[in-house]
Amino acid sequence: MIVYRLITEDDTSQFCHRVTEALSKGWSLHGSPSYAFDGANGVMRCAQAVTKEAEGEYSPDMKLGQA
Image (cartoon, rainbow, N blue to C red; front, side):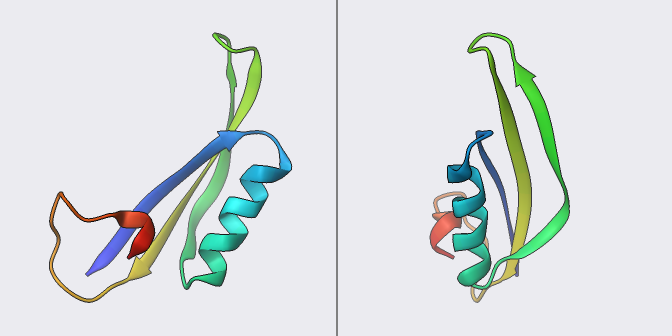
């Protein structure tokens, strides 16, 4: 099964750390990062999709970040 996650964060170094941590745990980048202005909070937000091959069958209860 292929597991999909979308990592989002304010445009800070924390976003890069979260993506780097996912890559270090076997996740792969899926597409390009996205940036958008969050007008409600007045900040830029980042998003990066990642995927990973995982054992088992899909369940809506699974914790995708722990796959």
